[in-house]
Length: 485
Image 1: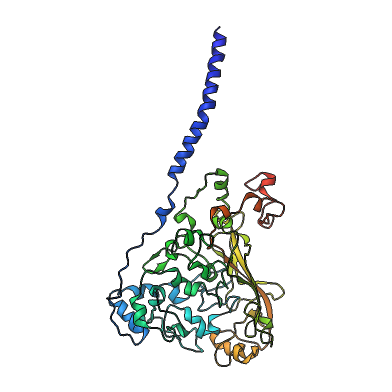
Image 2: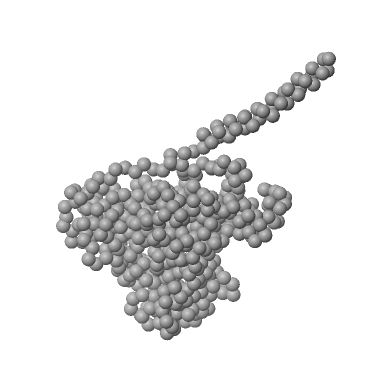
């Protein structure tokens, strides 16, 4: 009888466990859900901006007059702006393995594989500088521009909410009503930021692929944050004393993580109800699943071939321009996926030697499967054929605009000779064209959750990820491991 009672007790306990375990699990999951971060708690509070319509009196004869008026109430604003890369166009000095001296990287002194370099087209490129009064000069790296003059800081480009646009050499576009623009100032809008950042590379969405004019008035399908939640750029790129959080890897080498924008500013590091998805966040960036395509409305440039410029072919902005060569644009672009730890393994510097028999990396994201800080991240890869010196074996940055520039004379040899003083690079008199690659992280145009990648998008015969190229022996779902054997 005692033996029977013991079995009966154990059986009753088993039944109770079967009943209680689901309840306990549900309770635990509910408690975990309650502890997850509220995304809205990370969004900065927008102060009520004081209307300046009756405060600013004018008149203003020059844009510098506007800035002096701003500084009468905001005396530290210009100094703060002048400490940013928006003003200096260069990074802090870096020590890089292939140079003996520290180097800086930025639009002021580097090249890319789009319009090549700001020194070649000062009139147009400086239109997006946050200052006034650039002048055409052959001494681009010297004191061509006085970076110490506070009155040259352009307050309006970030704060004017109506009636303002930039023109040549950083000055206001001809015909701008400075008084009306100054009276309209407010917190920076998507339009303010986008007036430059949407048009990088010479046109709307040309450069990044995930930054276009569709983000000025986006739908939730365009971008779930800006279109669905009506966020501003500064809600993620949090700004304090005019220091804007977020660094572009194209113009940097090493970036302090505290200076960079991340999803976890607002979102919980393990945001999903399904723990299997949360496991992925250890090795996969949020953007990888939640930005399945870029250039969803406005196409982006994927290929630029400078070697075909100068021919008398029919100009078509999306295929060919005599002054710039041949292009390839694409829409609904599937990103390329690489390990990325937020920094660069390499950034081409003016004068770096190249091997013209193989593609040259303008920049190369840092990270690998063995890097605990790296995650699989989506990139746009822009390919170009651009000029190089066949004797010195380094990339050349021609003078494109202005007197004697390529766009007026269509003479490469002359354009490279004119550039010698501005770039500081000798030109041998012999040039050719070589292939280059440039990587742009894809981080805007986040899609609604229902559009995120699903399991089969990566774990299938024709999945997006090249597992072996990423360092895996194969699809982890097939061999069942999350770590390398």
